[in-house]
Image (cartoon, rainbow, N blue to C red):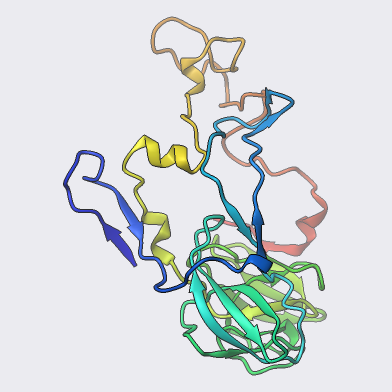
Length: 271
């Protein structure tokens, strides 16, 4: 749920935030560690632009593999995670082990979840694509069996299983792309929550700085040594046939590598 601040100050006038889960407490010590600050630098040299100076963070270890097969778990808490835009759920399994999973939209407190090759098609459960009915909405889908979920991990995302052909399933992604994924891959049932996260307005520069985001400067405002768009008199344009990155690579249009080895798995390109 998106919340707008009361307009008490100019910085609060347009700011908004997501409602955080209630009574979640501190993250589990066994499932978290201090995330090192890299700030986009290597030996003092800037390697990633516009990064640096963020607040201290704990990284929560998320179970993307869902490889605890056949053991029933119970959802004990929903927690905020500063490293992603979707909430996470703390699952306590019947053997006492605790794990974090991504929280789907309709998952509730004290719900039971299970991961198995063949399980009930219920929100929060994880099972193989070959045992999931066509038309089911999914998240956290494996591209390679056993590697862990790589597709559908951000807020509001839902992937639709459109068809099964041979040893592959056809998945329709939020971008409109249709992609083939092995039917032996695991996927979790349901669409992820926090779908309004994309509408958050930070409201002021300081909030960006706490997140480690430094000011972004336009290439046309720089000098020619710093960016291909730089130089010129006054407000001059890019000065090239195509916009370029800082390193002289194409920045706009189709920038995907040609003849990439995974092209054979894409049935329909994104819009």
